[in-house]
Image (cartoon, rainbow over the protein chains, first blue to last red):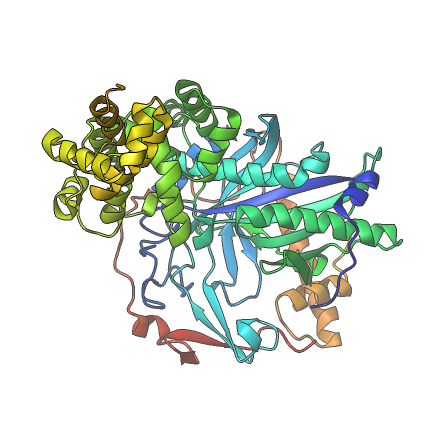
Length: 501
Length: 98
């Protein structure tokens, strides 16, 4: 990797104003591909989900997936777009073995959705409106494995192997208008936009939008212009930036790199660039000009799509509550700060917390367990929170046991541990591990008597009025009962027996 | 109407990965010019009352339900491939040394 000159981010911003354009590809969660009935199931054996249509064999004809079109319209509506009354597909021609047809079926001059916006909320609560240019339907490419070069890279490879299971899976490409006016917050805006879009896609239930699985991918276009200049500078396009953190880093890096080139009197080359997760840098890919001659023409094998206004209005009426609106509603219901709500969003815990409340837990308990104990487990095991082997109903049951005084927090944590370890539901874990709070007053009383007897000096102090010393005796009782006593009740008993209650 | 130049034919040939000799470039430039001229006559007869069309069939919204249909087996899918490896299509080096 060649060494790239950078200037500091602050220095870059002192002279230049960043302009961004974000292109996000979302793989739809349909059962079948966009133009044929092949399954889209992940993890199948190579080339086991192909047919004459997605392999581009002669004589085959594509037919559009109705659910794919419906998903596109829903996304368009949720992004406040106009929905085309009539639109068509186009062939994007290029020679690259990831598409066996030598063209990608896409939309060109007539996208299904256009002219919208998405309001995103920054960490401090400020709303930034990102204008949407278009959202169009297209298809994914096959998966290449490059052989014979260093670390599987295409450079230096002797040959490549192609699996076309992914070729033809429906994609929606969402393109922003130039994002201006973000200034130094450009990296934050980019990240917040992709995060909000991901929430939106999930709320619409058109895709799981898991970036780590490639179900959502972002290309970052960036250019700089000197402060006060209207005209945009030359842009670079960083491809396949596949996590929220990477989107932020890629924007930042490109701002610093562009500024260094411009400061030294150089010119930015319009090119695609590759992002490197390891150090957050980008390196040059192909020069764009040459590659851009895709000779689009209308796809003759597919007839136009003309969504009726009635259907569009039906879909609009059935849209779910949008994520930002929902978040703000929940934040008010739960009485949280923007910051706390942001943490919950970042942890991916909103859905789980809501489901736990729906299962009967008080809101503060639901939040406490998901954002505390469970978030820690998720972190340690690098598992998304919602995939932990515990259900919201089980968490609600734990909260219920605590509220009833059957468990204290310490025991509840052990119950959760047991559930996560596959020992069964909360009640089963309580039963098997013998985790009930000792509420048998007789047994507890005996433990308290014993603690007083073996700590006579401390007991005397308490009798003399030093109530604070009771903590040591509570500790002794908790130890004797292996943590299974209700500490507050133990304290009461101690003070009672020593006559200071 | 400007004619099709040799350079344009050479550009198209490169995009289509066709190797054309110099005399072929001239030959095809002339031919393409004729073809485009012929097609352009359509716009001479088209008037305000004739909407632009990109499709000859008076059909829209031909769609199928999102239901899985059987795929080919990997063996069938690969049967026409000149080369294969690890149940995948094997293709020659994509990027030359540069």
